[in-house]
Amino acid sequence: MPDIADFSLKGMVEFSAALRSMGSGAVSMEEVADKIVHYLYDHFIDKETGGKACALIRLFKTHPYGELDEDLQKFAQNVLNAPPESPAMKCLVLLASAGTLPEWHSRKNSRGHKAIPLPSEHFIEAFPMVRQLIQQLGLEINTVLRPDPAVVMDMAQTTYNVFLIPDAVGSKYVPAQDDFVIPFGVRSVLGFGGILPSGNLFAVIMFTKVLVPKQTADMFRSLSLSVKVAILPFDGKVIFI
Image 1 (cartoon, helix red, strand yellow):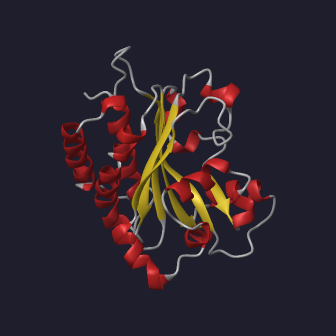
Image 2: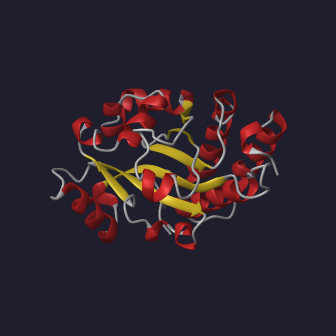
Image 3: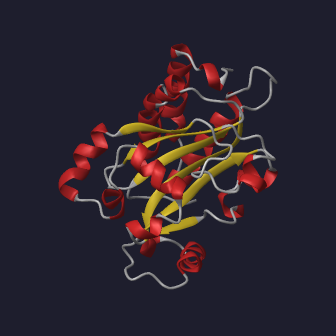
């Protein structure tokens, strides 16, 4: 199993092949997402300790509010403190989770990230990591909120970027410093993802317990395509288990 801080070309090829195959036999995007985050959590190690290299790994996808179940709609409303103006409002929905604590192995146990509403660019300012994620993936925030069908197909074929906060400790982009970053030894935050043909964003976010250099993070661009291949058959179809 590879060391995440020294991810090699060989490791990238091995992981890409494994991730691409995870849609086989699945019946929903959530099921595939769960396989993806657990594979990454189980297979990346910290060579210094021999333990898991990540404290937490999550896979998110944007989704229209009107197509969420009652529980997720209620969660989004609580964040907004009001019903949304339109059922088409995008929410950044947690599809899968794996991490140090047992409760981190189910999306349903998340207290703050089950369904983050994205009603406007101004509202996203309250979620600095989400804003950084979108921008570092090379996307305009308004493109994520209101995808233009005229450009979605081109973006879906070309957008495979990475998101990196090399030093998570003290970063204004990483909340819960005292409750999460410090006690669980989070050193860097690494994300990768892209745009699906539906116009929805998908992203894997890894909270690592080792410092991740930029040249290593860049290698994860290839894994974005592999994750997309795995979840693509369910885009616009069966999302949740």
